Amino acid sequence: MTFTFAPARREQVGLLIALAGASGSGKTFSALRLARGMSPEGKIAFIDTEARRGLHYADRFQFLHADMRPFRPERFIEGIRAAEAAGAEVVIIDSASHEYDGEGGIMDWADELAEKGVKSPGNWKEPKLAHKKMMNALLQCRASLIFCLRADEKIEIVRGENGRTLVRPLGWVPICEKRFMYEMTASFTLTPERPGIPQFDLPHKLQDQHRHMFPAGKPIPRKPAACSPNGRAAPMFPPPPRPPVPPTRRQLTRPCRPHRPPRAARARTFPETNRPPRSTSCWRKHGRSRCPARCSSGPSGRRSTSAAGSCSSHTSRRSRRPPPTPTRPAAHDAAAH
Image (cartoon, rainbow, N blue to C red; front, side):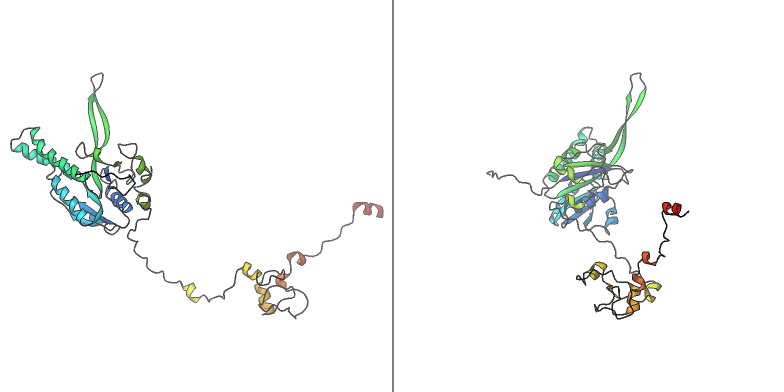
């Protein structure tokens, strides 16, 4: 077999992303949003290990669903290969923690071997080998994989300097094999206090070229188009249409008014003259002819033949006021006396 080298260029390469958190931290919803942002128009496969609970989001996202049980590592390999055969570009596994501590997982498998007489650590040899084969299959997968992992708040009991027992919190720790998180391209920890928002003060893994996809303090992802290779928005199911609002009684009984062009359009109708804008009262008084004040009421453009003087609508307020009383200067009054 010969090797062929070509210039490297940025292409759409599969990612391994892990979302760890306690119950109610928004892992499933965030995984579906992230998957739709990564593949706006492609297929999404959902491998459900939690009794078909992923179908709760079937009305908000479009994806392929499959139920899986038991949780042997080879079952996960079969599910991922079946999703690739179905044409899925993104595969979600919820929850991948069952591969470690679920029914038929590697912990259950090791306990079964211990009951058969295999002593520790020999009882872990076969389960660990199966887990390693699963990880190798995940790394060779062409589709992007999103793992939802359960997390527990762990503590550590240590001895202090004075001999007292101290409890040291370790934070949220994902339930998985200890080397599982090292194989991820990106991993985040979610908390129930802020569902769907990655906590960057907790253990996480994120490369620089993917940091723009996960802004700090915002849900995963805030804009699905940010995760798309071509930058297009993610086509989600539109919300159900709202029922039409019936017209009110006032709208039914209100007569239709004739269309009146804007004032700017009316002013441009007669550019040769500098006339004041049209007035409704002037229109009613003079009809289709113009008032003596040469206003723009009436489309004919003719000068009104009515009595001289402008209509009351165009009489300025200043002209309606009584003339001011003339006052004589103080010097004139002194001379008169």
